[in-house]
Image (cartoon, rainbow, N blue to C red; front, side, top):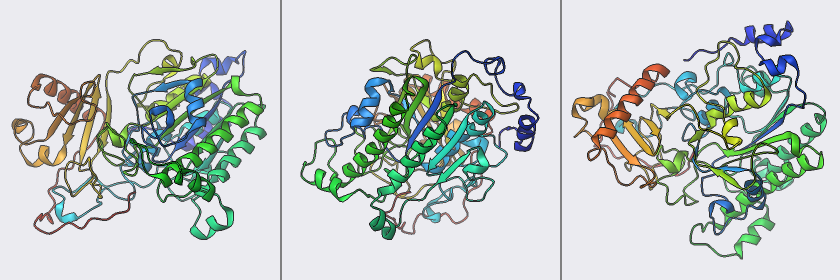
Length: 487
């Protein structure tokens, strides 16, 4: 695991009243203007193409579209993992997966064991209590912090939202079928939204951070009957055709609109940074074409996500930014916006996006990374094979180039000495081939080898482990059973 400040030390420093050890000089010296409120709207399983502004010809997302018109759209935004829990751990910790050890939902050993060539790296299902979250850092900077909705990073008090720095802990599970009939609140969209709105109103006179984390648009598909009826008569589009999914997507957009309207009614639009994004790529119900794959994959369809930022006086309305960014960048962005420094001893893998929000300059780094040393079941049309959605893999994107390093072939089939024949590496130019269909690993060996060097160097620096033990139960002659439900 990576370095992180012990929570007891962190809280002891804050209770002693020496915030200057943690906060930046602007916070220590006092700011002439109010620190910005921050509202993070985090959607579950919303793909890169799942909004009207992104080109959908079925989905109706007027509130998200409005946010896009009023702010800056990041066209190359990514989650740091292909599914829910690890992406959320990266977001809250500001760290890549090797530093916190949350790689998957439940287990890294998901799928038919007899088809796994390696023993995967074990998974953690919680973000460790000692890992200082952005909520704790923002609280230290003088913010009221509230979390509303899906958590997915542990169930004991020390690792639930209230134990991880959120004053208002409104962690809610999606409604059961029985509860849904009573409340008519699909995915708890309105319960989550109303809690966030009350929190903002109660803290309108001080800086606040609201983490609005929806269960939508994750399965199961749920929406109010009126919304189902609306889309049942609309007819399928050429891009998107799943009418019930469109209804759920629109219901989620309604929740977004309520939050935006509340910010406006409180007179806080000029004082609030709003960021809208998703935890991973979309579901097979919703086409992400021309991207390859869906949630759970480390091809573009599994990790590229919508992302919009609106900050009056900072972002320019109706603009876009094509710099590759990840949700691991949000932690340092929040600190930068608040005028706070990184907590002592804390390693952050991301980079503040404030300069990009201003439309100025570039980021210092030249590459971003993903690391998944395990197996994920339920393959889809973009998967590399018909047994697993994802096998152990590490990925680098550098400029227009993206390289996948597959661990099984790397460890068991000769590694670098056999890289021309063992299929351990795939290389794509995303500018020319955003769908990742034309593997250039053998035709652009110079670029392949350069990116491979950079990837291996990052792995050493980040402590990213590759599975090294062969699976004694490996026997591909046995038939693999396929499950339908996706997590």
